[in-house]
Each structure stands twice: as C-alpha cells, then as structure tokens.
Image 1 (cartoon, rainbow, N blue to C red):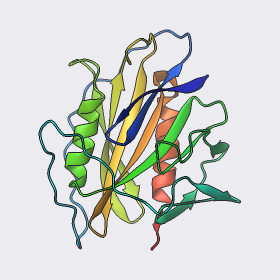
Image 2 (cartoon, helix red, strand yellow):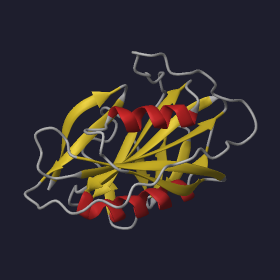
Image 3 (cartoon, rainbow, N blue to C red):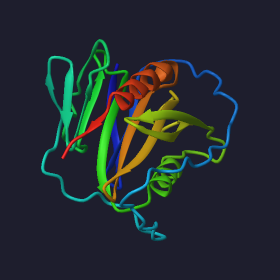
Length: 206
C-alpha cells in the first residue's frame, strides 16, 4: 500500500492511496464552525477568487528525526508511535511522516498570509470530488491553541477507494500553516489519532 501523488494544490500535496479495497459507508455529514484563534499578530489576507493560495519561502524543508523528536520549520513535536519519516518528506511539503506501510500520513505546509480558517475551508473545497462528499469537524489542540479542523471523504479521480483528508490550520506570528492528514477510509482513524498527537505535542520555535 502506497500513497501515490495525484496533484499539487496551491502548494499542498494531495495524494491518494492505491489498493484494491471495497468502499465503506462514510460517516453522517456534520457542519464545521470556526474556532477563535489566539491573540497577537494575525494572518488576515483573504482568498482571491480564481487564485490558489501559495506558500511563502521557508528556511528548512523536510523533517528531521532525533530519537522520537521531529524537528521541522519553526517547530518540534513527537513522532507518532511506529511511524517513520515519509519518502515524500520535504519534497512538495515542509515535512511528512507516515506509517511504515504508507497507508496513512501527516504532512506540513506553509507559511501563508491567508486567515487560517479561510485557508482550510479553501483546501477542503478544492479537493472535493463530488457535491455529496461528506465533511466532519475535528477539534484538536495545536500546541497551546484550540483548533477545529475538517476531514473530507473523497473518491479521487481514477480510484475505486475512498480517501479521507484532514485539514488543520493555525497561525503563528502573522503566518498561517497547514497540517494535513490523509489515509484510506479504512485507515482514517489511524491518521486522525496520529495527527491529533502530532499537533498536541507541537512546540513552536523561532
């Protein structure tokens, strides 16, 4: 089981997993509502219609791993138990970790100047494969900040297997960042749990 690149969406890599599997029923749809961000410098730019948001330059691409500590652009966190640095780590992203089997992953993107909730909303809709694709709000702690992400259950073009992608957006010193989870529908809970731990253990650095 591997994650196969499909397209690059405004600097955010969108992958689906190739495997012969049957489709299961998606969870009932739930409408997400924004969670207030912390005080301080804000990313306030809005989405320009017809223009995909693009990330600014970074001084470090790709995660490094020392023991169980993952170090990336402006942060450290803890590697989810049993996970590894992905083969796509630092390619079309600022870093990525995955299961050893490659059936679930957590990736990091940014910085953006777009307001974080608007940024996440854009990418959720941008990967939507059909009007009936269902979304689910996921409340997490991103370090010390409460963030509400959104999972969307899609059927990528050319695939018979549904994929669940999660988008979590936060801001730090006036810049927005995205953490994306992705997995087969059958492995969505694995990606969600790992993503929640990765974000909970997140410590921003300079």
